[in-house]
Length: 409
Image (cartoon, rainbow, N blue to C red; front, top):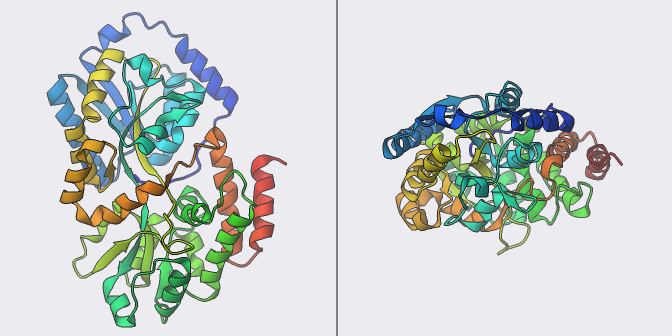
């Protein structure tokens, strides 16, 4: 995750996307490639200090290796897509863009980015499930880099004091979370805000229970929300979770007000700054013993704009997606490298990442089924989750309404 920090921000209509793409494609680009031969422009949302440092280090290494200078612009995550749309309208698209994997469908559908084959590249040598994140309607548009997902963090001291082990199943999670709750401490915290962060961090319960986001009111999805609501009812999760994003839920864990936390791998460097906190990490519990947990995939991919200097973009991306640079970047961000050949070295260098690596076997793309419709379903789901967690509506009632809102029928 990336960072995986998700906010609803796609305000542009499909018609606007098509119009902007047509405007871009209609540019007279004669001489553009020659003008950019020595420098290309990039855009990303790696503004968080750890991510920003890792990205700049990777780009600097590739500038030195290729001789192609990179004029980099980093913007906050919620602003990235809007910045791309504005750049398209003003005919100033950057050559390469580092986007969240869930945004591939939107930019490909709008005609802002070109297939990798048009650049003379293929997504080879990558973990297949991660390479597939760049696919849209049977065509690959993006090169993977490093990815993240969520795991279950636990306070070693609090679990030891309570005489419990980290849970492996939903039943154990409920039992352990209840036992760890008392006073100002809750057994479990997670981001439950009404946006993509809330969806991202609870989607594992939906998918692991056999549910999906294209059918929000399926019995399996209803059952997942009922389970989360039960955790609140028994006092194992605070009702305030509906107001927490990633930072707020992390702070609950840091302050000892949450004994366990559902959070991403990107939190590790932040938690490591607190030597008094003794924590461990295990995979997210599953409904039944021995099942492979299903988890969302966070993280970013490189795409090439339709007006890019293809040759310079190719040189730069071949470096940025190369084994050495990807390994360095992934370790700098505590993300999982997408390159198969470096996985053994990564596991050796960062053994604490093992739970996240094991979960990747059950990684699920948020947009593979819904494509550009995903944001509507995510927003409807997170709104329903809010109502269910505070007891305002039953899971069935809330998700029936969510399905109608998202699908329009």
